[in-house]
Amino acid sequence: MKVLAISPSLDIRSVTVLLLVMGLSTPGQAEITSLDSGNIDDVLNNAGVALVNFYADWCRFSQMLHPVFEEASNLVREEFPDTKQVVFARVDCDQHSDIAQRYRITKYPTLKLFRNGMMMKREYRGQRSVAAIADFIRQQQVDPVKEIQSLEEVKTVDRSKRNIIGYFDKKDSDSYHTYEKVANILRDDCMFLAAFGDVSESERFSGENVIYKPVGESVPDMVYLGSLSNFDLTYAWAQDKCVPLVREITFENGEELTEEGIPFLILFHIKEDTESLEKFQHEVARQLISEKGSINFLHADCDKFRHPLLHIQKTPADCPVIAIDSFRHMYVFPDFKDLAIPGKLKQFVLDLHSGKLHREFHHGPDPTETTPGQEETEGEAASSPPESSFQKLAPSETRYTILSRGRDEL
Image (cartoon, rainbow, N blue to C red; front, side, top):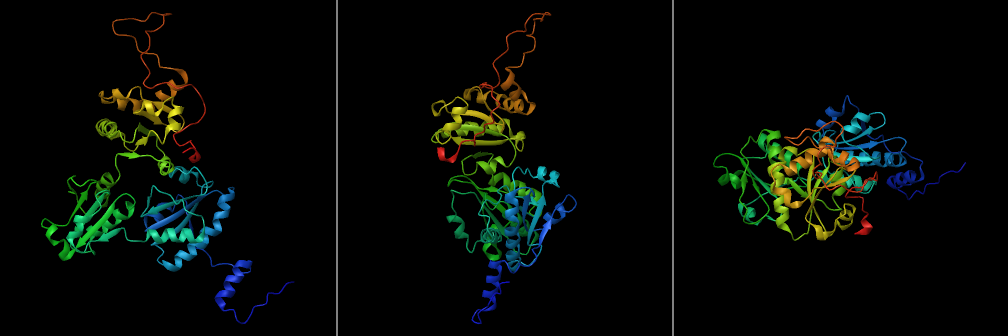
């Protein structure tokens, strides 16, 4: 048996590190909360920040992450001892497939971030090391609200970004706590600022208030008219301002958008063609606002997405082009010029939800109803069908989406 000789010159910390490296010592018991259908809502709703490891025991990468996740939990607990401030949790997706389905988990392991029970749209994508995970949690603890010391600072805010500014009497108030909670959730989408006491007094002539400064120097401010103590109303208003109805898809954010789990309605346009983008944004707002939540409205640079365009038999010269990516197939809107026809774009989306686009993709246009004033006799063909509601592609079971193109093809 080999005996480990320890030099008298080594202090206890060095010995501990040495033992850990050699595998002769074990770290303290990690505080990882196992989640199931009975406790998940209670645990997550009462956690300021929760990092949840969705794993499967048969997955080698899940097995490799377990000790790293536990060590990161130990390290973070030392810095943030309040068990409700930061929670490390895990879900066995084989045992709790209902939870995996609820949060659209499609790969293992997946690390999802939650704030006060609400899942953030951006999952953890950093290095799977103790230091990187711990640093990620530290970043989440940084106050997302910048305090304004003088109203002169409001004049110098970056108008290339979306800014929300709150004017409060004091920090220790229900209204500011609501504002702070909203800011934590939307910290990646908006810049949040706040002024208090004497600094904000001139802006509080009718009480505490919150304003939104859109992108652009000449765009007027918008005032929140709801109750600042009502989180749901405040969050809904801020989200509407911080997250645009039509977002740009890139190869950097594409996977995050895909993980939201709903199809894409995409406008492919030349980057400089802002007119087509404005028309698309206008019609989406006019025809499809009720569909928000069931489909993502996006726009993409034709040149950057040249390869995906080839898969729908298009090139940048054909842009602007509108298409739906269902994650199974891509369907093309017949003609961009038809965009302004009342109900045309909405029907295209409804045809996706009804299964008509998928059915016609494989089997051709649906038979039409009998033409008014004409009766279809038994044994005779129906009147010729109209053009399909999308440009039919070559039938194929090959799964293809806008993100199938590898980064090395950029």
